Length: 362
Image (cartoon, rainbow, N blue to C red; front, top):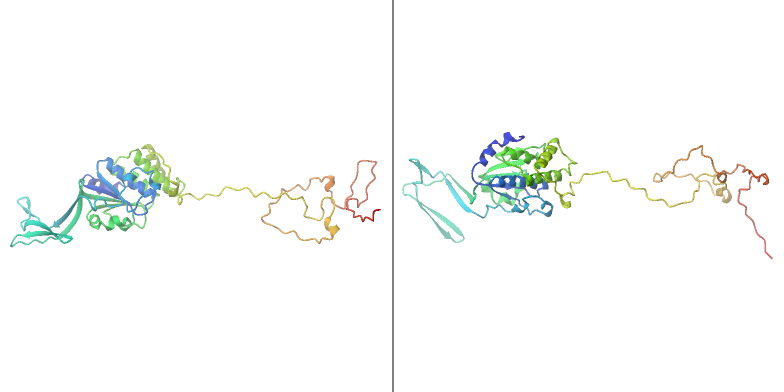
């Protein structure tokens, strides 16, 4: 598969015993959480003792992801299991048997709020550890590997890392990310800055680790891809669509992503054309001086004013210049004719309004 050469050491390390941690960064997107949970479920299905952790309390927007209820917001080995202090360089090999000849016995005693460990040294011997290492151990064994998914640096894990620096410094780290600013903090770094989503990376990684993909894992993969690409409308690549096809073939279902998690992912589309606001019905008053058979400006001595061009005005349909005017719309200055021979031809000013002055009645 695509990342097989980068994962050779990881695949061999997974065959050993010990607990595995999948760590998510703070403010993780749906894609990052879906990727981490997919890896967690695949390891769990393979019979591994695995836990998934995040420094945050996950929100309702991620509640449709499979395995989300298993996420802990504290490092599960940070206050549970056996606490072990390892003193390096004090064991001797005598006839094939490990022996600490310089140590007679080990006692412990309380000292206020402290617990003192007392190493009783054999007289004449030196007891000088070259290094002191501490770690925790659950029933599943010592933490042997930590997968960090979607973090540019270990500081993105916040308290998960800050409260367990010894565990991280003494554990095999696998760094999976697509951010170009990633600090390459892992013993194995699986980085792909060309990938559109982490979910499409994980679906390629799982077969390289001999981990199977079931319907729940495939559904998480689809949810992560659809959330990160705004339903495949943004920043997708050929590998993205290949991953979608693989997830669907594995039985994955496209989940409905919560609205709150999609607000910043919705693609920008052109707004639908809106109908122009209805214009009030106005009398049909022509703009020029020749209007419907008579001229009001001429009667009331209204000066002509230039017509202002209003860009927001919606032009009416253009009427063909060859259209014939009805007799009532003929302009002033043309003589009206009658087809009735009994009616005399009217005088030229018959259309002009007349003003009559009435006298006293009675």
